[in-house]
Amino acid sequence: MKLVVPNVEEFYGAVTKRLPQASANRWREAARKLSGSAYFWCGRGVTLLMPGPLEAGLTAELSQRSGLGPDRLFWPEAPSPELSLWAAEKLTSLAGCGPDGRLTGISEIVAWGQTGQLHELAETSANWGGLAIRGVGQREVLWIVDLLGSKCGLRHLLAAPLARGEVLMPEGVFASNLAEAAGVTDEFLSRGKIAVVKADRGVGGSASAVFDSARPPRTGIGRHLAIAARSFPLLRRGPMVVEELVLIGPRTTRSASVQCFSDGQGEAKLLFMAEHMKKASCAFNPLESIGARLGAGALKDKTRRALKESAGVVGRKISSLGFYGVMGIDYALDGEGRPHLLEVNPRRTTLSGAAGAARSLGGESWEERLSVIYLDQDAVSGRWSELPDNLRRRLYPDGVDGRAVGGWLPIPVPTGKSGDVDWAGAVVLSAIPETSELIARELLSYAGNGRNLDGNPGRNG
Image (cartoon, rainbow, N blue to C red; front, side, top):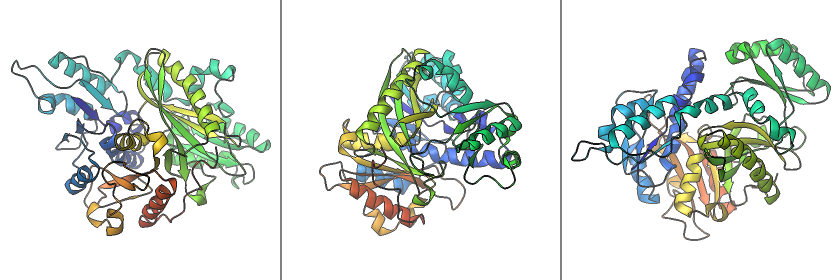
């Protein structure tokens, strides 16, 4: 049996502990919603854990219309920030016991990311059931996960391939405090650059500040950073890195990502690529993501080749250190379509659910057959009972049987406080890119985010 454990809040536990209470609560709420993508990670035939219950009507219709969904679904009666430890305590319920009293069934664990708690779950399961658990790797290499959470650590780890030109990264300078960061930023702006100041262990674009040489802050760089640090304590504590913002054109950014599977023995298999999207009105702001395009037409061939080459170097290097599991590699694209490495996330990403749904419906060659648009949790969400009929009719039909087929899948999320949303984010699929664009615009309009996406698939790569 395959056990799916979206241990998102658990994975970010070390980060939330360093945040003010209000910010930590926002992260926990985001983690709750992110866990919903696990519904589509592995297709059918799995046991799925969730941090809370899913809306029954939504999951029933998803199963009926698309055939996707787990065989069994479990969640804690009370909120548990450490889902793996809760699962370890409930193993007999999750997997069942055979006639001899030994745990049966669990042979593989699929998780958001590796944590000490996840290893405890795997070890407990192996001890009880007598089975070798696939999908987790070795506890001894958790240091790699910690190192990759540091922007300084990543640059140190990849020093050799960076020196050889096998991997490109934006120009960057380390700073130990805000005063040093302000000085480095001023030097970047004097050369007409756009600079991004990032906390060494900032996550998800948080704890960062952007400075444009064409529009310097009126209060001065140092004062602006000091104000930003009030909201982002990680900036106060240092270290940090000042990076050049890579542009594809005047005040316009474009980013992409690659997801790989590392075998821990020096090899990394490319799983899929994606081109990130932003609202058309936010083409400059690198943090205003609205989702991503995957599959057919998402990136031009030249950029796909460059991403594959760079991600191969990065993936093999990390794999050679013993890391086992899925990793997401993020890039900024320049005007020639060349990828500049931004970060490596030793975990699944929000796009894992989109790719999983596309693979289940379109087969192993889904990237060639399907145009997929993922809209993130901040772009579209709602209550299932309030979904308009025109959007309900576009729910994805059975399978992918022809070029006219197209529709969308809402991502179910554990219900939170009363009146909260029960789906957040969506996966749009069609064999025709224009159909995917049309449905995505309808969803954005429903959510109050307008109808415009930032251009046609693949235009910038």
